[in-house]
Length: 622
Image (tube, rainbow, N blue to C red; front, side):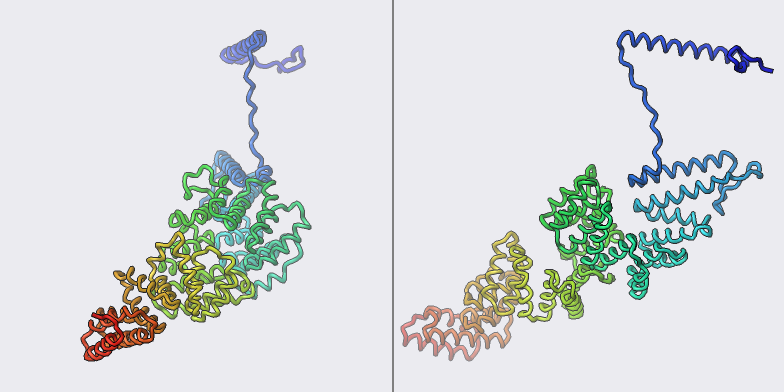
């Protein structure tokens, strides 16, 4: 038996010689360290502070801070530790069932709380993955849980369906959600899926099952927002904010609704208070940038995103998909082909902005291919689909595409929600433009003229509509304004622009200016069409000299009998105006020269009559 020492404790065994030697060496090192420390204190030497061991983060703290990436890392580490411990103690995972089996002795059992601990960690892992936006990882985790615990906890089906909704797999999400138990969460989920699947009957069914709880009302507000009922969504968010002052994120939702309602300054004001509390909120900063873009320009918007893009060498390297998308928009399409195609199935606006990029670069067919299979659900999608069909109709001279475009424009412009908006009135003007009802076009364009004082596209369309409606004075003024702008060279090379400007010149009694415009374009492919325009319009307006010149040039290019008849009538008309004193007598030489260029029996008679009048009136024609 061990003896009792004077201290009343059990005596330790003496141990081996090697162990005693180690203990003595350890005591010597300790005493030496103490002596060194005392000496350092005497000499006033400052000692380095001892490093405190950092405690591992706690899951509750990470979730409270919304550090979902940190939570995922911690949970995966703990799960791996738990599995390694099982493997080390003889437990191995069966690849078929996914269950751990004891294979070393065959008789041991898994601790009772081990499975529960693992399932709890996996649920938290799925939760963190879902909230970090990694829906695929969350879905895989829930499916693994369903295989093991699905019968015990059918709510897992509902959670998995939420992940499928996030991935955009709506049909699958509906099937999985129906396997879960009836609950408020299941009803909200099916409510959203009915909207995504355009099932109005189910939408109304699940709508009726909503209650006056915060979660259900938030769900209802989001559906209002998705269906473009922004005012209804705003009313719900405001009421919830009054009832729950601590729910500061509701300010962002209200600001988003005001942004959609075009109240950009109000949206900015609401965001300011939220950003004071959460200055690093990616959603709020992005929305603020969008407001700045609408109110000012892309540079002002890009400056707001600086905290989110700091350190990224290029747009493609920006972490957030939404920010990466918006940077392309703010930079007027820069790197669009590199960034937007990969985001088409992630961000709904990416497809629309890529279509706009193609339209700006006259790539109509590429834009049409992106839009042809899209079923429009928002005014922006209807408008863009109408614009693309209009461009295709003009490019292919297709009445079918033009009719489709006209129908889309009419749907938007006549809708109750858009009829009094600027885009709605633009749509109605486009609809009547296609129908060639230009008086109606002007009614709508005049109602929004004040909002586009320097917009060249608006001025162009407004001027063409005025010219087509016979308001050529105002039309000429608008077209000349474009020639004084920064894109003057583009308009000078535009065939349609020059044709309308020439017509305005002729209709306003400036046939000489129209003829000079033709001379500048004489070498172009469209000069023949302009000659026809000048010949007929000048003849109609009584500018017979320039009509005769135009018909004479046309006859030389194409010896068509109709051109001779037009030239003959224009020459006789010009001679009549000289006789009436409404045209200069010196013009007679030009008329005779134009007539003599045609070999026709009628020429000799006309020339003889004109020369006789010239001799009698003292007009020199030779």
